[in-house]
Amino acid sequence: MDTLPPPEEATDFLAAPQTRLAVEQLLARDAFEGGFIISGAEGAGKATLAFTLTATILSGGKSLGEADPKVRSLIAAGSHPDVVVLRRTENEKTGKLRSEIDVEAARRVIGRLHQTSTSGHSIVIVDLADELGRSASNSLLKILEEPPRGAALFLLSRSPSRLLPTLTSRCRKIALRAVEDEPLADWLVQKADCSREEALSFARDAGGAPGRALRLSLGEGKDASQMADGFLRAVHGRGDLLAASRKFSGKNAELVAEEAREIVLTRLRRALTEDDLSRTDLARRLAAYDKARALFAEAGTADPAQTALVAGMAIRDALSGKATHVR
Image 1 (tube, rainbow, N blue to C red):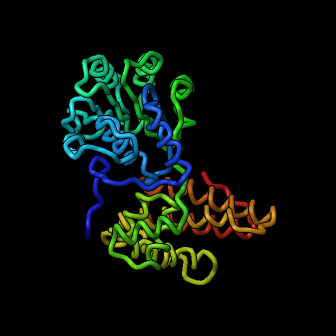
Image 2: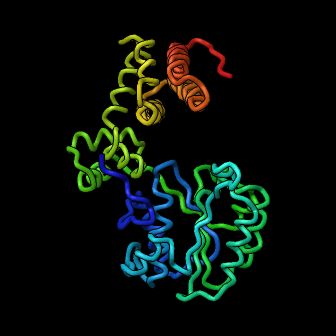
Image 3: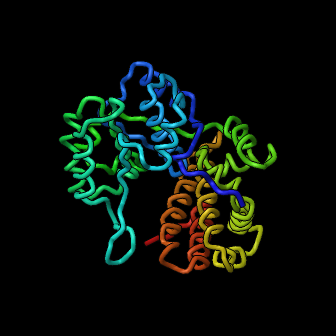
């Protein structure tokens, strides 16, 4: 299996046309100073955009991706003096990642921004802003209110509505929307060893998120798609739900099951946008999606097969109009 390159090493960026246009206009005006919230679903390309923008800005480029190879190389190696990436750090005592980005890490970043830059620009990438602790968020407020000249802060977020309002009010917004199936499939055919038909399937199952689609095409996407297919067929009464659910906890099935759950949610969400849905049918599909999402959120702390079985029954009941309660 090929590996998915980290966003620091990305050489291109795929986005919906309106997103690309908004970014290009900001670059043309040399307007990347202050705070920016880059939002989007998992795999939408938030980090890829942030690092591509960083390389472009530090190279003096006027179009996204127009960057000096040496600058790209330094950023990829984590050694560019004008770039700081703020992430959760490891707890020295437990050896595990902390639950949030702590205030001391945020303060160190602020200190770096006040140092003299080599390029005339200083860039901070907060990956993810959703993981900022309250104290760390508050510590960033003043720098967002009065950023040093040439400083830009890219706050990546899956759920910007959950960030502190005082934080979001000081930032401009760049929202990464879903890429249409056809251009995403074209991109996948170039990037991965898959057919056009497979690329379209991966594009749909990724919900228009390029990173997810590429991960599916380079990894175990076919197995995950088959697992999701069998599960949804059983939910609709065309298979054994218990047998389909058991596949979620098979030997070495953790990664495939995780992808399969995301595919199930994507397909249920896509079903909400079909034409000519009655109000009743839409309400049932929405209830099915909400219950599946709530139950799949417990997959990491419960038996995966049992979680899938309960979710499958809840989806089936919701689609048939039966009332069920999900804790």
